[in-house]
Length: 488
Image (cartoon, rainbow, N blue to C red):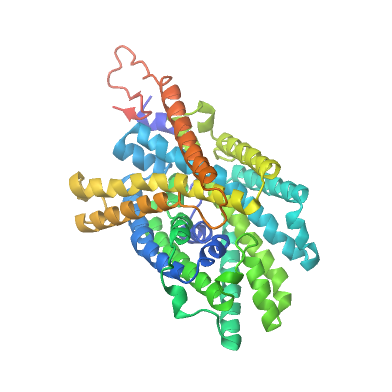
């Protein structure tokens, strides 16, 4: 059997994503209006944190995504990159943290959707968001829908991502437009003092980790590298446009909330709809609340679809490499999607949704713990991403990539230092935390627990990997090595 024939027998995914699809995917994955209130509630100083994160984390992230995707095209993204540069275990740990972070994040997206969508039914239904039974049923229903759409394939599921991107644009435009109107008519409670570093900055420090978490997402398309049409030409432009648009929207939305409402009136959990309701009531356009809620609901559904579909490619590739059960690497015979990985991910998220409703005490504290834990797990893979750039600058072959030594070194050092800082400050308690020791125990327990599971799966399943036997007299035939690659 030739190498071409053997490659043809391997699971293949369909290339259905163009540049426009990727730009909208980046916007819907990166720009999340729901994290803005929790950040803006810390005051004007967060604007400086946004600028620092954009310059020292987001821009280096874009350079890293383009460089690594150019050197190592294919499905897997952060999993594939860390594996190729640092070895199999580091690749698995990077991908594992990226995937399990979404186990914590996707359920929060479902809850966001419920909290926002009830406003589309009118003010009289707003109380449904606090009804545990309704919220759980609606969250599960959306989770099932998104799982089915992603199983059917990105050729179908991408339209929800695209609708989410359009909904994000419209929702952000309405928010910023209302903010400008309120500011022009009524002025603003914000003063220059609000942009100064507070006397006790520990609560603000926690928000820096959330800001970096909010800026993650440019790497998502590379996780689906085998599903992009002409990725080497398509990806760089899409990263640039998606990054610029997302960064501008984040800063604009934060400034709008501060100028129009003020940090003391921003409700962290109730979200952006309450802010729009507040501003719309002041300017006499309360009718805009329901259509705004519809647009924001589409945006949130797109966020859930983008992250669910993208992160499921990690266990898919790990299944092919035999670090997880082989079933994870199966492709649906009709739709050409990693359906087993999607179903498993959906089931785990379902369990977390149910646990969240049945075991939650203080909603704000539980939300903050889950968000902070997700921040840590999400940022661990970026330690590998930026360290890879430094390694290329010091020892790698620059002919294989797009950027020179100076650019790689700057992006690698800036990104690595900023990411490390963001992980550390995530362990600082936010305002909603009432018990410091419980918070720290939860944070260390969740982080170390998931890392321990990664060690278990990697070393447990790696023992099952054995090289295929080479037939006698067929030394010129391709054989599959232990790492799953065809060797000639």
